[in-house]
Image (tube, rainbow over all chains, first blue to last red; front, side):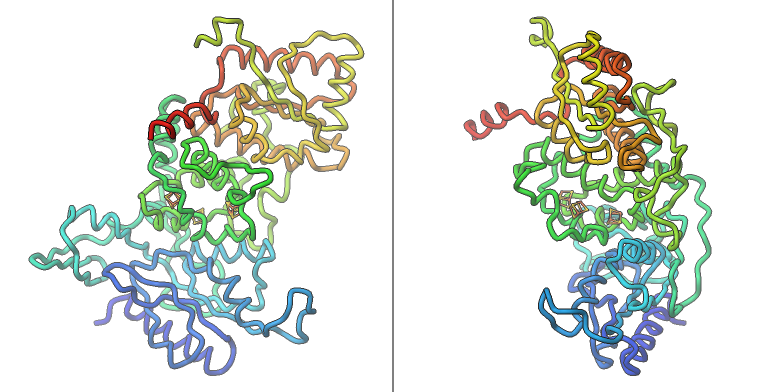
Length: 348
Length: 153
Ligand code: SF4
Ligand code: SF4
Ligand code: SF4
C-alpha cells in the first residue's frame, strides 16, 4: 500500500509530464530530493523527462510561490527592458501549492506580480509539514542518517538506532495552528481534498505573549532576536518580499543600520513583519529557514490576528476583495487615537 | 535617570499634515494658545505619507515621543489618505505595544485647521504622557555604546 505522499508524488509527476508534453505549460515548480535526510529542494522542471525528479513528502517546508514570479519571467521570450510585450499569450507555469502557498499566489495576483491566466495550480491538500529542527531536538545531537515516512509515523534511523515517532508531534507550529490546509486556488487537483481544520484558537502562541506585561514582552523581543545574524534568509524565502530594493538595503535614507546592533536588528524585524501585514499567510517559511531558530513569525502572526479582528480579513482568502491595507472603511476602529474617547490600544 | 533629575525635557517629533494639523499648529500659534515647546514639527503632505519607516527611524534616532496628526476622517485634502493611514497606524500601534514599546511613546491624532486650541491640548497631553514615561531607551540606537564596544573589541 503506497503512503498518501507516495500517491501524491506519483500524481504530481504524471500531471507535470502531461502539462509539459501537451505544451500547456513551459515549466513546473515542485520539489526534488535534497542531499541530507529531511531536506528537499525547490525544483523547476522544464522537460517531460525531468518530471521523474519531482517528489512530495512531509518535509516540503518552503513556500514555492516565492519562485513563481521569477519562473514566469524566465519562460517569457527574452526582451530588453524597454521592448514592448510580445504579441499573443505568454507561456504558462504550473506550480504545486498547498493551502498557505495558494493564498500567497492569490496575494501575488492581487498585487499584480503574477497573472492568473499564466498559472496552473496543482493543488495539494496539506497534512502539515514536519519541522526538521523539532525532530533533531528529539534526538539531541545524535546524527540522523535516514528518515522513512509513513502516514502517521516517522521512522528515524541513525548509525546505531531506529526509532518510530508520531508525525504530528513534530509538525511545525504554524501547521499545527493552521485552519485552511486545502488550497484556495486549484486548477488540477492532486490527491484528496482535506477539510478545514477546526482549530480552537489559531493565535494561541500570540495570546500567550500578549498575556505578559509590557516589560515581559520587551524582554521576549530582545531575547528572541538577540542571536539574529542578519542573513536575511527570512526575507529572501518569503513570497511577499519581492521588492527590487528592500528597505534594509536603502542607503539614502538608511532606515536601518547594517551592523549587528540590537536596535538595527530589532527595527529590521519590526519593519519586515509590518510590510507583510495583511499579506502574510503564515506559511512558516521565514521561521523554517532561519539558521538561528528565531521565531520571527510571532510578529506576523500578531499582525494577522489584528487584521482579522479589526478588518475581518485573512490574507489570500478572498481573491476578488482588495488587500486590507489598500482599502478602508469609513468606520474603521480608531480607539488608538490620542484624542479619541477611550483611547488606548486597539480592541483585540 | 540622571537626565530626568536635571530638568529633563522630552523631544517629541510631530509629523503634521500640511492641510489640517500643520495649519492647526499655525492657528494655535497665531491665537497665542500656550503649548509645550517639546515638539519638533515635520511637515508632511498627508498623514498617509507617514510611513512606519519614518516613525521607527525617529525613535531610533532618539525621539522620546512621536505624534502623527492628520485631518479628521472625511476631511482629507486627498480624499482618503487619512483612512488608509488609520488602518496602518492601528496595526503599527498594536505591533509596537506587542513588542513592549510603552503605550504613549507613539501617538496619533486628528486635528483640523480650525482647531488651534485642540492642537495645543493634544500637544499638552502627549507631552505629559511622554514625560511620565521618562526618556526613551527601547529601540534608541546608542552610538556611544556601540563605539565603546568596538574600541574594547
Ligand atoms: S522586508 Fe519590506 S521592503 Fe524588504 S523585500 Fe520585504 S516587503 Fe520589501
Ligand atoms: S512572513 Fe513568513 S509566514 Fe508570512 S508569508 Fe512570509 S514567509 Fe510565510
Ligand atoms: S533568517 Fe534568522 S538569522 Fe537570518 S535574518 Fe532572519 S531572523 Fe535573522
